[in-house]
Image (cartoon, rainbow, N blue to C red; front, side, top):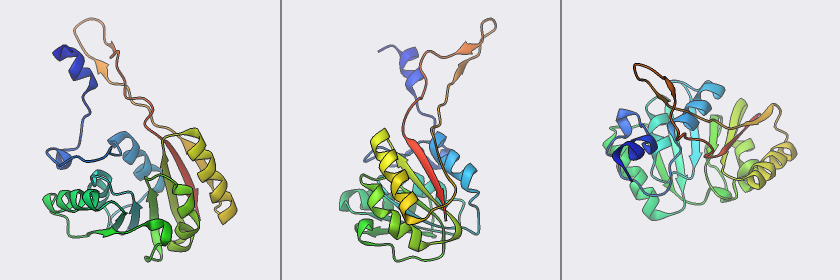
Length: 196
C-alpha cells in the first residue's frame, strides 16, 4: 500500500490518546463527539460506561466529566484501560472488573454509555442507574443490535429515543481541485440515544 493511500486511512486522534496502548476496537472521535454533543455532558456529569476496552472513550470522557466508572468483564482489557487512564493522568476514572449485565451499582448518573455485545440486556439496569433526564446511549455496530436495544429502551420506559450514525469525510486541499478524499470513515456503529 502506498504512503499516500495509508495516510488516507489514518485515524486522527486527540493528543491525549496518542501513544496509548490498544487492545480491542475503540470508539472513534466522530462517535464520542456525537455522544458528548447530543447528551450535553460536562464538568459536573457522572458517567457509567460499559465495555471499557482500551479505555479510549473512558479517557476522553474522564478528561471532561466529574467522574466516570467503566465496567469491563475481560481482565486483560480492564488492565489496558486502567493503564491508559493512569497514563492520561486522570484521577476521576474507576475501572471495574465485572459484568455490567449483572447490575450497575452507581445511581443518579447523567449518562450510561454501552459499547458491548448484548447491550440490550443492560437497559433495565441503566434505567435504574440514571437520574431523571439522564441519557442511555448504545454504541451498536449492527442493525439487529440497534433494533433490540431500541425495543428494550421502549419496554423500560425511556422517553425521547433516536438513532443515528456519524459519517466523517476528510478533504484534499490543494491549489486547484479541493475535493473529498477517496477514503472516508463511514459506518462504525449506530448510536441509539434514550432519555429517562
